[in-house]
Image: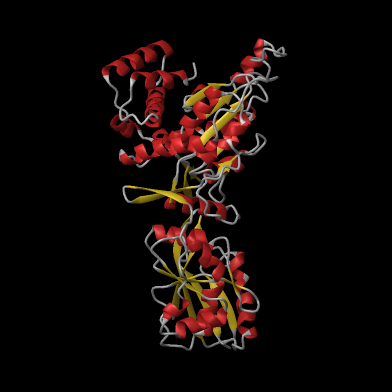
Length: 500
C-alpha cells in the first residue's frame, strides 16, 4: 500500500487526508472509498483520461483508493493529482511520498489546474503546523507563495509531477516566493501593510464634521457605528469610504481575507484593504448568518466592515442574531452533526432614517409620519442590539454652503498613528474589540474622569456594557491625540456619542 498526503476542507478549516491505494488481483475495477463527494467520484474519469492520453497504461487490476480517515466527508477536485500519481507509480517501490502534500485538479490531457479550495486548505494546514512541503501547479503556487514557512514545488502537468518524484534534486521544481509590495510599517519587529490608494475619498463629503470625526474614531479603534440622518445627507458615502482608512493589516489578516475570498468563489487579491460587505435588507437570515456548510455575510466580513443600510428594514431575527457576533467577536453555529465557529471581528456600520418618510429632522420638508409610525419604526431596533453600538451619530441636513474639509489620506495617517500606540501598548486587539479584562488593563482613569463617568452612569442609566464602550471609545480618542492616558475631555467626547 502506498500513501500520499493531501487534505480536505471541513467548513472553513482543513483536515489532513491520507490518500491510500491498493492493487489486487481480480476483475479490473476502480473504486474510491472514504466518504468521497460526487466531485471526487467524478475524478475517476479525469484520472483515467489523463493517464491514457499521456501513454500510461491503466493497470488491469482491482484498484482501490481510500481517503483516510473515513469518517470525514471529503470534497474538492484537488484529489485528482494524488490519485493519478498513485496509479501511475504503483510499480515504483523506491518512490518516497513522505513529507509532501499534493494538490491539483487534472484536465483530460493531464494539465494540472488550480481550484478554489487549495489556497484555504494549505493556509489552514500551515496555521496548524501540519504542512512543510506542497506540490501544486503554477496558478496555485502564485497564491500560496504568500504563506510563510512552507516550501512550494511547482509542476505544470502530470508528466512533470511524475518526473518530480523521480528527480533527486527537488530544488529544480522549487517556486520562488513572492513578497507583498505595499506600504508597510514595522512595530516591535512585526510588519503591518496598508495602501495609499482611496477609491472612495472623504474629500467628496461636504460638511458633516461630527460624522467624519466619529468615522475617524470608528476606523482607529474598530468601533461599531450607527449613522442616523435624512435621506441624502451622506450616510452611505461615509460607510463606503470608512474601510479605506481602517487600521493597517498584518500578513495573517491579509491571508485570512484572501481565504474568505477564495471560499466565496472569488479570486484573492492579497491587497491590504479591509473588505466591505453590504447585504440588502431583503437578504435571508441564512445568507447573513450562514450555516454549518456555507459562509454568511457575517463571516465574510471578518477583519473588515459590515454595512447595513436602512437598518430598521432588516428583519428583527437578523438584527438579533448580530448580538452575539458584535459582543463576542465570534459566531457559533450548532447543528445536529456539526458545530462551526466563525470569527466576526468586523466593524459594524448601520445607517437609518429618523422616521419612515425620512423628513423628521428636516428643516425644509415636513414629516408625513405620525407618532405611532415613528415609534413603531424606532422600536424595530431593540435596546440589547443598540447597546452594542459604540458610536451613535445624528447627521445634519445638507447645506449648499458646506465644503470639503478633510481627505482620506490625512484621516488614514491619523488612524495609523493611533494604531501604532495600540500595538506599542501591548494590545493584540484594537480598542473596540478589547475584552473586559483588557479594558481594565488598558483603559484606566484618573479620579476626575472616574467621577464624570460615575455621574454619567447614574444620569443616563448606563449598563456595564455601555460603560465599557465609553471607556474603549475614550481610549481611541486619546490615541488619536497621542495621549498615553485617558483625560477628562476624552471621556466627555466619548459620552457624547452614546445613544440617550
